[in-house]
View 1 (cartoon, one colour):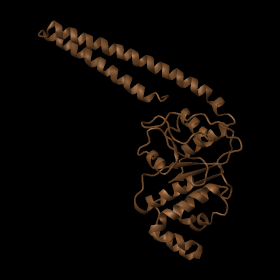
View 2 (cartoon, one colour):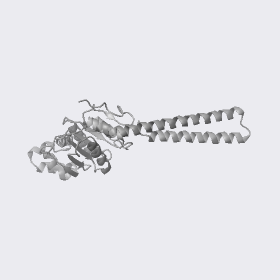
View 3 (cartoon, helix red, strand yellow):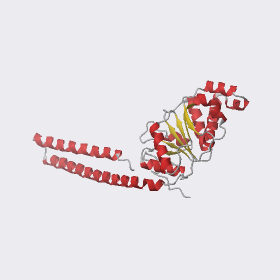
View 4 (cartoon, one colour):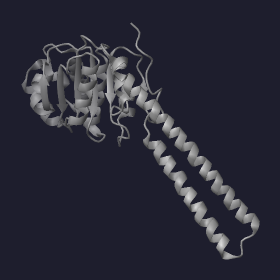
Length: 287
């Protein structure tokens, strides 16, 4: 709705059509064989193209005004919305510094502290290595040994990440799973933001990640998967299939507002500017 790139592209297409129409009309006129009716048709097409171009320009200008107004309203819309809220940030793959900064800025604008903890998961997982480590750590971990237990293992890790506390599995498997970590692993959080920075995974790793996402959502706090506009391949479907809310335009002001509102308790859903979303923004959180 507020992303002007699509409308600029449409406007460019109209201007191309306009130029082609003029050139074709001139060419036909110069041939000496074109009937008057053909020239009139070419002129009509040219006039229609000009009208379309003007309409697109007006729409673009109006959208820019709307976007600018929304940007001005943004500080008021999110101010103090997340005061006292603790948020954790999980990267499925390496940390993306740009997205991390955007999320931290959103939290700060909404009155929250920086993420309590930030963890990146190294992928793909090496199932035999995980089994060996778990087996060596004692009987309490044996129930997670085996390829058929990867989903359960991922679920337990997801729950630990969201709830904090002792996190025995993260401690046991940190060397194998964690690419980067900082912050307080033990503190319980009020919401989790998830960012996927690797391509879709297959086999054992996909099974493991399905468990992680499910474990996150079982903790009883908002869990929001985010990505930048036009991310290819998108993680939105994967996130939604596992019960996460999604924001597909975290690089836009609307996306930052959607994230803040979801963390504040707005209705879960799929939000942003891509096709198939529930809306650009969720309903403003009550209470």
